[in-house]
Image 1: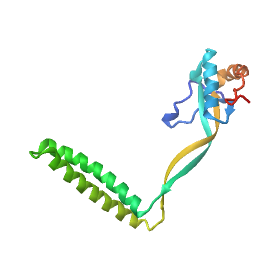
Image 2: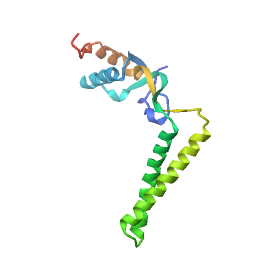
Image 3: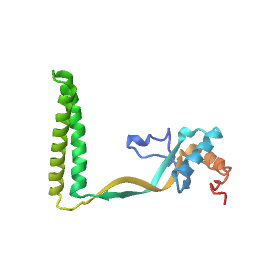
Image 4: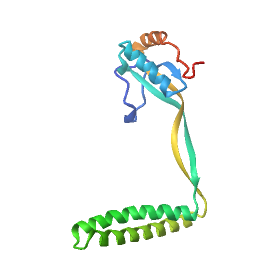
Length: 167
């Protein structure tokens, strides 16, 4: 079924439309293809890059222990204490140092306490830190059906990717 109009903005949550005109292993290759189409003065508003075969990847960044949790909690609490101390020093009559230092220390103490208690309640079920991201295995370049044949023909002219190592 031919599609009309322009591809949808992927940030809007609506599925992109169009025919697949090319597929690449990396986003940079797909971007290079769309850039090539733009250089050839093709109407790239009709083109969309779609990451497919999505995977969630969690990279482990470290181990959590009571000392590391306490240190992170103290740092977070100290930051909050510094903020509160600065606010109090703006509206208080005491000196900057006599207001900020106690607020910083109290914040660090409470931050450490809350972090250690929270960690204790986990029962050792997640003794590591990590960062997560969603990655695509393939990147499809879609184009509206009305101009897909023209885009495919132009991509036939795309020179092969140069190997950065000169092989």
